[in-house]
Image (cartoon, rainbow, N blue to C red; front, top):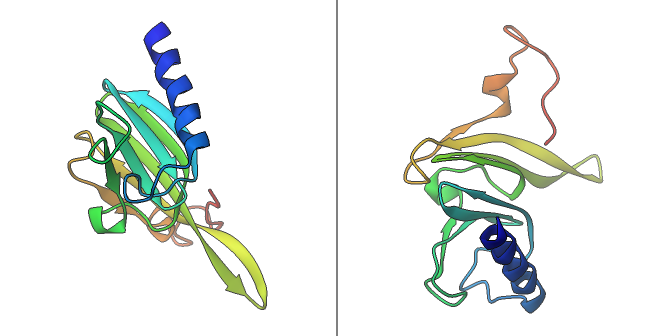
Length: 136
């Protein structure tokens, strides 16, 4: 447990340092999860995996829409072993007002090697389920 606490303390420092986005998909983050022996970071522009050993270039692997996760910011993150669930949201404008809209859930069952993105419409169909989309 002390090792995990040390890693999380290091990431608090990492956030304070405002790392270059060349290293990390975004220097603005939210959720930090430890699972499968690795550290996952939800950011404002996607998901990051710290692979170490240091906090410089090459220490992080990024996941975005190009890798199969939803677009926008990671609003929630769950990790258990090699299974990763990611909820994403993006900004949109409707009738002159800005809103954050949930883009669905992305899941990897193999530690981030492959991803499947599930849109809200696929989970919440008016014909087969609740008619209110999830706002992550």
